[in-house]
Image (tube, rainbow, N blue to C red):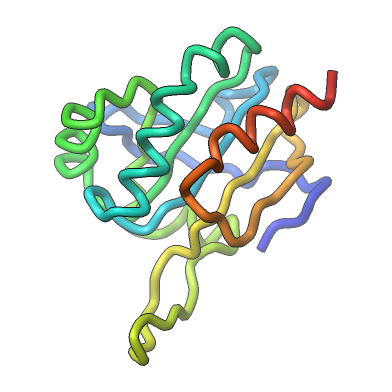
Length: 154
């Protein structure tokens, strides 16, 4: 996993509208990059919903939100439409972004091991440096926690 103080890994993947989104698009901007396992699952829906509800608060503070999962563009488009998500969701189908951040790995659920995204969030400053990492996110309340941590820097 990348560490606090590291630069954001370079990436270029499509968003829910099929537009190419690059890490350099956020240069000079504060942003949140959150990784989640799968569209339309309970935890991921809770997390996306809370970030959506708080999105205007983040925007007011000049903070962009970026969601990343291995789902494809079509799934993200449906998820954005249903959840009214206004921020970009990146389709990391090849897991290049997840691997670059170190969040793709072995998981366990109900005694079964499999490879997947470990729900994690990275806070990035205007210089493109990661200043806070949440390696094991609990979806409920996470958006408010992230916003408070950004605001505490003022």
